[in-house]
Image 1 (spheres, rainbow, N blue to C red):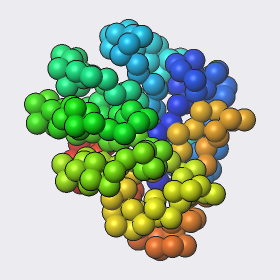
Image 2: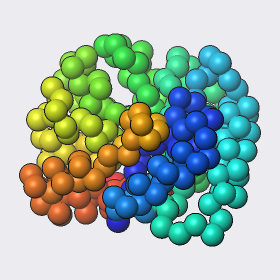
Image 3: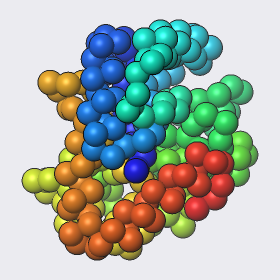
Length: 236
């Protein structure tokens, strides 16, 4: 079994699942693909909502979903988290650690979709050194064409974790680059980034097959080990 480290399964939280029934369908599909744990990473935008308001909404959505899941077997465990959109000054936000993956020091961050400046990198450094938060960069595959190699290498040197979306391994321009980064253990986590049933549905099974064919099942096992260490708040 594996972990889906990026999903939008909580109902009515963001542009993901639109209903409890859709969330349950997504979870059943994921479980059938070999997923036993889904990290629920609803979008958090600092310019439109306070952290307290977000967490209140998230807890409400989670409780509604868990009530409907009572008695239903063969669905993954849900771990609550957030996909935190990068914002200037985030390392100085007093309550930022509340957006980490449940009870850990790890935080999934959606980086700017433009070339990262030294100020952007310094904000990430400050999260690590001043707040003790270890960033996980969401869908690094979407940023590869925009960044100079030095910026990617600098984040790797800091111990920052890279998560790739399954779709990056399909018919995508960055497919070979992502595969090489997985082989070099520079991409340590995988996620479906699933948003629904008819739109961006769970798809990790296809990615697993591609990775196993290229590198063997041992690479998939290492990715799973990475994920379990993170959920137990251990370093990888």
